[in-house]
Length: 72
Image 1 (cartoon, rainbow, N blue to C red):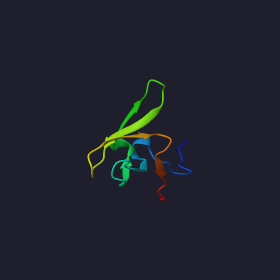
Image 2 (cartoon, rainbow, N blue to C red; image 1 turned 120 degrees about the vertical axis):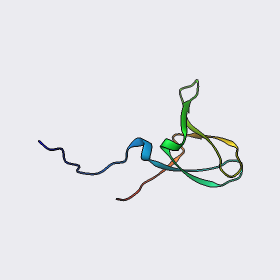
Image 3 (tube, rainbow, N blue to C red; image 1 turned 180 degrees about the vertical axis):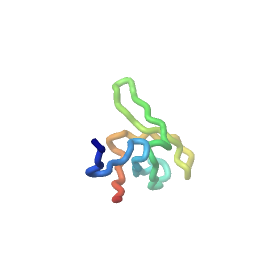
């Protein structure tokens, strides 16, 4: 039996997100593979990376990062 792809998904590392820097207000796009994922003591997950514009360390809640859907 051959496996068929009915609807193509996106691998987690290739998902693209959008967020706004709280310091300089730049709108940033990033791939999941380009940022570090961490969690707080209360088990809340967030992405962390430096803003390429102002160099401030950002902590973006996983649930508040807007996923960008790409059409194939």
